[in-house]
Length: 537
Image (cartoon, rainbow, N blue to C red; front, top):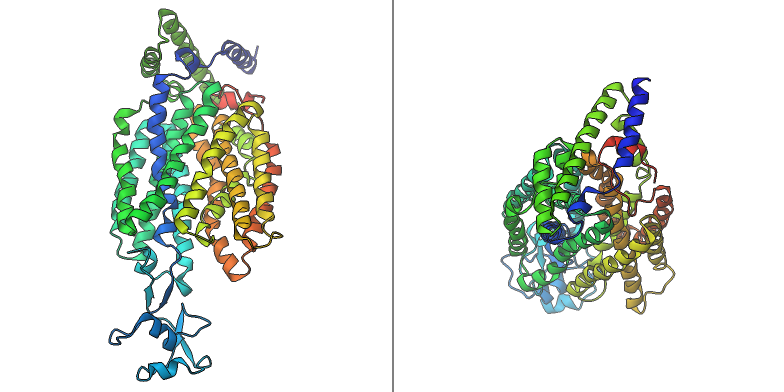
């Protein structure tokens, strides 16, 4: 018998023995998991806070060329004599006669030469202070708002790559604490930004930190619950993001000052520095890295907390740990023999995502979410409604994926989001609430698909590369997210209907690409690269 035949037989025996998920032995859903869920839920709040807050840092404000400091006239008089009626935001008349205000006001002065504004005044009836006014991100600098959103998402890109690798190598718990510390330091410095480049750099590191917390906490949560509870906990974890999203309009309405808002949304990150003492290390990660004593200690604690501990449980745990150790040694031996490699896993599992399912999903989600300032009506209410619509989306999606799996609900939700956006084009603008309703329907379905993709991806990758795998699969998503803010600029430069058409076509196409993915519902997650390459869904 060759070495290859011997390893194949060992692998077959190991898979036949591994019939029960290790977390089911200690209670796949109990007080131990619920406590960890509550902490990980809070770890997702800062991500929602800091990602979506630009809508209130740089809201749509009325602005106009600033009055000369030595001229004492009202805003109404200034707009009448100094600003051309076809562009009262970005230019003023080159020559202004202040000595005959009343006479000038009634003259036909539309043909007079104009010059661009060199400074601005802003409507302060709603906000006391904004970044829009601090850095004059208006007129020919209006694109700086979109840049700031894209730079933030770029921080996600780096975080998924760096913290994903570090988490798989050094553990979930230390990386969660480090990423939180990065977010705290960057957020505090950001509040005292004295220039736009300084603000961008800080936002980049805030994004890296909060995404590191969010992703690592999510992976930890998925690794400590039983297979049949992954849908419930996975969907539930998204409420942390939505909570951070939902509190923003309330904070902005109360504070109306970007500096104060920044300080308040940084407080959860400071409190979460305690997560180092509140959360355990993932027992799956400990087993995958040969830390059997620590894994047994953590699993025993979980079993006792869940009321599942007995001598029989301890015997079974030791048996599974022994098998896991044997499997790890076997995999190391197979790797030395050259069969198979991690590259095989990347080819098999990442290829379905490479056409852009995650990129399309993130592109449409952020494109709709960042666009609330363009809706008619009160900006605080519009933002809150877009956040609230995610709650029923999560609830409905949970029940759907319990019975229908992952693939079909994901495909249907993407197509439905696309159709909703496309209907905005033929539907008349009046009454205004019809278009707004279609946007909300699109937001409902794209939120559903966004939440399914997270669970889907975690279930595809083995423990040894799960965090890195989630980060790698998210790269296309981050590219879509980076591009999403500029669709707003494209709509302003061409036609307002262009953004929803782009969102609609891409979402519907993404729904078709989902059919390339395997189904993972109620499957035991793979522990090693060896498991993942040989699994048949």
